[in-house]
Length: 308
Image (cartoon, rainbow, N blue to C red; front, top):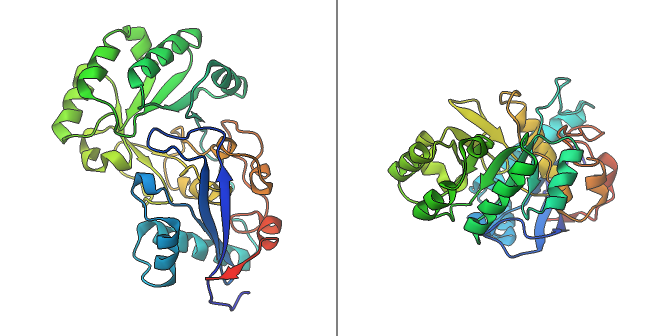
């Protein structure tokens, strides 16, 4: 298909093992793998987080190509096609950064398993009942004092309630928090005041893009963000998507300082598949998939591709 400029797609569904964040009640997630010429890519929108629906993304892919998530998928497709035609992997020989464990629905059993698998950083999601959730995290941090915590609110926290909740934490307990991600909506001055008063590092994702100057950490998702070095800490994470998208995020993470701890190990949030088996068990070290380009050669060829 090297000279074929038609766009082909293979739709898929991922089934999560539990709720993935405070803004979504879904357990089934639709996306599409993309093929054009020699290249492959992936589209995995999150409408709950502001993306167009999958059908809207595919319509944009077929015509205007104006949506950022579509433009990034096309960029990946082009890079993958060039690498495959040259018979090489997209990944360089340099080692990838270590990763945190992603545990959306935190339990003591899941945390214990993450520690056993070697993780030293944990990212968890809160928001529905964040007062109780923060207290649970505080109690767990006492049992695993060596762990560093990244707590993602998806913008659902309330400033006064956060102040009250963290007033119960000792200085030692607070020192175990690496950052709070998108703790509140509001204005930039609210973020500055909250960070100063709590003495905690704040991180901004898509819910806090307008507050980036007031956040010490920028959380970047290659599926929807341009990945480039910049001021402050930069943490690259997957989009909680297909292993193809997850692997492209790992590839793009090579553009950023590898001394940071990233968040690329998310495939075990979903039921296993032929693709996820390439990535092995979740551990701090990302497993580079075998094959040319982004990898997964045999799995991709077996799919039922249809012209867009």
